Every structure is written in structure tokens, then in C-alpha cells.
Amino acid sequence: LLEGATLQAYGAKTIPEGGWFAMPRTAANGALVLGDAAGMVNVPKLKGIHYAIKAGILAGETVFQALLGEDTTVATLGRFHERVKESFIGRDLYATRYFKEYFHGGFIPGLVKSGISFFTGGSLPPGTGRLQPDYRGMESIADYYRGRPDAHPEKPAFDKKLTFDKLDDIYFSGTSHEEDQPSHLIVKDLDLCVNRCTEEYGNPCQHFCPASVYNIVTDEADGRRSLLVNAPNCVHCKTCDIKDPYRNIRWTVPEGGGGPNYRDL
Ligand code: SF4
Image (cartoon, rainbow, N blue to C red; front, side, top):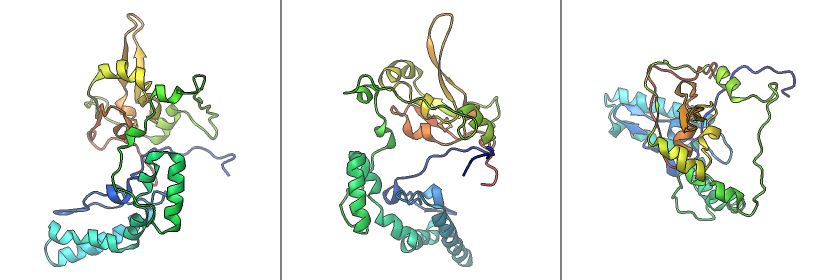
């Protein structure tokens, strides 16, 4: 299907896959949270745009009622959550509420459990509703090579026709930030990166970041290794905020509306 096509744009983003149990409060005084920001994603189907549209309609109705009653406090806007629960958004998310948890024990048990859940409409097998943070799924080097010392992680090859390297991706994301602003990515302990993390996890930030923001560099003069953070490259996918095994990276909001320039989105 893509034969002869040309790359037009690039983007990367994490998906809020916690489902029902990870949804935040959806109303505050003068504000509603909906769509992706409220975790309205059907994770088994990887779909959520129809939830965002429906939630937008429900939010519009809720705000309209609030404006008629001249009360936009959480007492009135809080009805939005009930409307969401009663709609197909709530029904779908409730039926798939344990999906993420089913996979905590591994891929195969997760597949079996989610299959049973699919055929029982979400009532079996039971879960606890407690979710693990995503970084716990990060495999250490020792675990990766355990029992297979000769394993070779695959290195991707890019043909620049259908697959592209990170520098091309950054260019096509159109991301830009004021160069002289303070870094919006704060690494709390830089020694941890070049010592413990290198040894235990092999600095995964270099690999999971889709925009080459994190690079371990070696000083030619004294051989010292350090972490170089190219914050202006960031495409705001939030992977580092979620996946860092030590919670050593803090993602803050950059200045002045910087970030990727997603056309047509
Ligand atoms: Fe994504 Fe973090 Fe890399 Fe920015 S720095 S592109 S948020 S992984």
C-alpha cells in the first residue's frame, strides 16, 4: 500500500492504557478533562477517537447546562463523569477494566485471561484493579541475557523509503523550542545514568526516546562518560516520563508553546 509513497510528517506519542482504573477526576471548578487526557482509550482495540468525540458532545451538554444555571463549579460540572459512565464510553471501559492488569504476569497468561474476558463480557477472570507502573516492565540486561548468553538484540535498518531513522523523524515532526530556555527535561541524578543505569539497563533512554534526546557521550580527553540531553529535539511523547526504570527524569512543560508541529492533527 505504501509503495512509492513519500514521508509527509512524523509524530510519536504514548497511549494512556491504564483504562478504567487509571482515569483521573474529570471535573474541577471551571474545567473538564476528556478524551485522551482522561485516559478514554479502549486498550484491547487501541481505539479512542470515537470516545473523544462522544466525550466532547457530553462535555458540551454539561457545560451548556452549567451556563444556563450560572454555576460552573465542580458541583455542576461533576455530572459529566456520570454521563460518561452511563454512555458507551463507560460501558466499554468497564468491560475491559482488567485488560492491562491481565498482562502483569506475562504475555501468554495475559492473552489467555483477556480471551476469557472477551467471551464473558469482562466479568471473568476477576482482577484487583491495581495497576503496575509501566517502568516495572523494563527488562534489565541480566534478565535479558539470562539463559541465552549469546542473544543479539536486533538493530533496525532504515531504507529511507518506508523506514526512517530518528534524525529524519525529528525533522518531519517539525518540533522546535526556544534554544535558550531552561531544559524542560530534568535529570535528577546524572551519576546514576553513567554508572548504575549503564550497568543494569544499558541506558534505555537512548533507545526508547524517538527523538535522540538522550545520548551517552564520552569525553575524548579524559574518557569520562556523561549524559547529553538535547531537549530541543523533544517531540513530547512522554515516554521518558513513564519508562525510565529509576524515575530519574522529570518532564516539565516547556516555555512558549514549543514542541512538535503536527499538521492536520
Ligand atoms: Fe519523548 Fe522524552 Fe524523548 Fe521527549 S525526551 S521525545 S518526551 S522520550
